Image 1: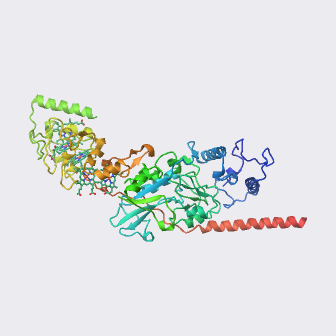
Image 2: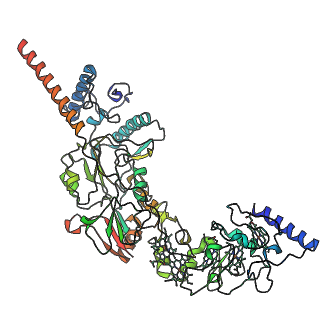
Amino acid sequence: MATPDRTPARPTPEPRPMTLQPASSSSRPVSRRDFLRRVGQGSAAFAVTTMVPTDFLQMPKIFTQEDFTWKHFVEMTDAEKQQRVQELEELYRKRFNDDRISIATTPAKEGVLWGYALNIGKCVGCRRCVKACVGENNQSRDPEIEWIRVLELEKGTMDLDESHHYYNPKEVPDEEHYYMPVQCQQCENPPCVKVCPTTATWQEKDGIVVVDYNWCIGCRFCLAACPYFARRFNWGEPTWNGNLNPHMHYLGNRPRFKGVMEKCTFCIQRSREGHYTACVEACPVGARKFGNLLDPQSEIRQLIAAKRVFRLKEEAGTHPKFFYFTD
Amino acid sequence: MGKRIRSLAGIVAAAGLAVGIAAPPATATVEMGEATHQGCVFCHPQDIRIAGPAGLYYKENGSLDGYEGMEVPAKLTAEDCLGCHDESWETNPKQRKLEDPHADKAELKHGDGAFWCLRCHAPGHRNKLELMNGEELDWRDSPRLCGQCHGPVYRDWKAHLHGRWSGELANATPARLCPDCHNPHDPKFKPLPPEPAPQEPVAAPVAADLTFVAVGGAIVALLLTAFAAFGRRD
């Protein structure tokens, strides 16, 4: 296998926020990024010249050298974001042979705090949400990654340890069980964010916990810290069977690569445009509800006021913004 | 297509009446309006075979015999009703077991016997629904009909808490109306086949890890050798 993205085949856009010459007009000292960039180029040259045919040196095809040198997303200026996204779009369009690919960086709206609620009285465990999520958010098809896990519990119990998620009867719901889909609970006090050694995961203003895939080093501390098993790790090189959703967000459903963490983002590419999430749209029983917790008129607020609502593992002090309810 | 058949049926009916062929009485025990007691042959000629677009109905000899063992008809639309239930067709308000083309609705599985079809369907205009106050509704306004008896659910539905709403959050539209999720004639939500279960986890890819260690080790060794050689030359 060749390493096309590390060779200079890809045209580099003219204006760059950081040049290779640190002594240029800007009087900035050699930053960590510049240093890394050079080291990166040096080792890239080394790899190319020695042509070591190993998997180890082989970077995933959508993972570029620039990925090492870019700033953390929250530190980027708008112009830098723009440029970064343009580069990525170009790269993805070529790589996935799809000109529709666009990557948004839509920021959180003022006065919005997203909340989610799921009616466990109605959920029938059909997994339509799971598949809709995979399609919308470009989870890897093989190895299989699914952000939503539907737990099957025996009626009359609430013990998650006794739940199953590989159930597969002919028809659901089954008389003896009820179902509880679990995905990222978008905690107000997220343990996963606390343990991340590289600040690759953080909470946005609208409450969504996101991951900058380029800053994730794959240590999986967050995976261990999450009490809801909501994070997924790319153990292998992800594949999409040519079914890539071209409507992407930088912090959401853009393609991931081997060795990084991913999770539910409340469909950041949809919700920030004011749309329902894919799982809400897919639910045949209408058990999934989504809205702005700061808007007293929103479905989610009305629901919390009117229904019997609880949160999962509340005793963990995570303050999830994902509610479960019954009529 | 509807128009074509309507005019065709009209022509047929007119022709039948003009030639003065008295249609033989329908052999089935259909009560199609107590006053007229018209059978299918009143409008449809005897020997015509009629299969709807979905193979809905089948009529061989002006009787309903052919219906037995037929597949349950696919859903009808409001436009279909008036083809049979026109002005000439009297309404039979009696609660009974229907022996008719609406095969799957022979018995009403809604309301525990407390009401009958015409609690919802307008007797005069079968393509309309009717509220208790006599107001007629289009089918697409069915939630109001249901709301008469299911107030709390209707209220939840309006607040987007029941049923599915879609599109833009600020301007949501119902993705489904009540009858799309609840058959009005048998409203319990039907079980459905689940999507495939997730794959059971496989053992960690040990092989890949070993290559990593082996190759990494080899490179480090190479570099060390190189450095060593470099150092000696100095």
